[in-house]
Length: 162
Length: 396
Image (cartoon, rainbow over all chains, first blue to last red; front, side):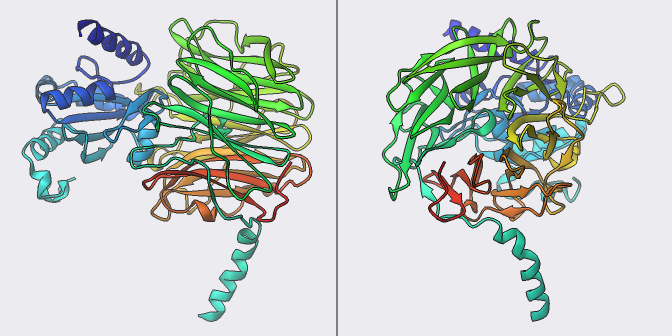
């Protein structure tokens, strides 16, 4: 098992060398994240980024640099990074294997960064495109972990504030 | 109101009338709720016509693991014959080209290496000894080229091989990387095209500029390649020190006219509306010109996916892709009209939950003859093909 985890770690370390997740966060790839979420029962925070993406870089520097946000998301979510142009393969909860780029097609990802919250079983809760602030991510956390998504849309929960 | 409707019908006639499609034919004989066929491949070479036989390759998981399959149908047959399995281990992104007289060459990634085989009858040839993927093929008569992305140190780079055909056997005549230097970042998804003068063009997506950019190189005879150039004329970079540039990915190539090569790719230069399809043309100078947007203004505000280009010797050219402008991801096409791409036309059988167009086009006589394939994603998922014109003369 240790050997398996080491290989996963090494593979993801190689991958992250040419992708853009925020530094210092325990992001893993999609397949490892789905397995970890099933095991832990934690929701998934999926960061759909792009290599060289300016708005991703801006979000990393401006928002994900916040230590409290880092702790909040690292403690309560399985963090998954997906490279929107990658041919790396992922296995969806349905069992279908597609590429990370194809996942963007399925999500209709028209812009990066795109942030997708998923249940521990990998079902989509909500997806949010574009630059967001620390407070935005705190609001989304309350919406997801508070279970409000079961009764309200995100906009309803936020009272019209996007 | 009736006058307006009549006017709209008349205006729509040239675009709709240009492509009269046959009824769709299902290719994969085994379907099920958890069986997922895929047509994804480098340069989207999933269908080919050889003599009076059409062949289609795809990957699905019916056996519990991803395997690659080939199905064929003769002109006289009403349906595809039961498919044959090409692979033994996990297999991805198969491609197929025609040799003539009902023979094909298929290639695919299996167990992390790339393979090729003449069909029917030939033996499988392993083309790479090290990790490789995303293989594509191009042929002109018995001259066959393959290109793939191969591990070279930390990253993959593009390799081009010239294959020899003897009866039903393939052999590697030459194999070389497009660039001798080790890659400084990831390269992948090569596309190949052979121009009328026998020269070889290879395009691929490349991250050496710290963002994804389609690059292209040429060789007069496949023995040595020119220094790569960008396909994109949009020189993006970092913004206020942030990022490295906009993304552009999955180039596709087609021979076009007597000497030309046409290219399309997905381009995010307008980053708020997803990827758009852009095209560029090499008229025979072995240099691609300015970029041209492909989708019309109705498709401009949404993401396009899975772009490919189909050329013919008479200079006709058509681009295909899918987008969801009508609420579902339908296959669309647009003819090149000399100065710009024309109105976008939905491929009628490809409406609904569809994706991943693939193609083959007759290159010599019937320039407007084309096969188009796609995945109908609504469960149980099906791989389907159809041809235009709808008559029985769409064979090589």
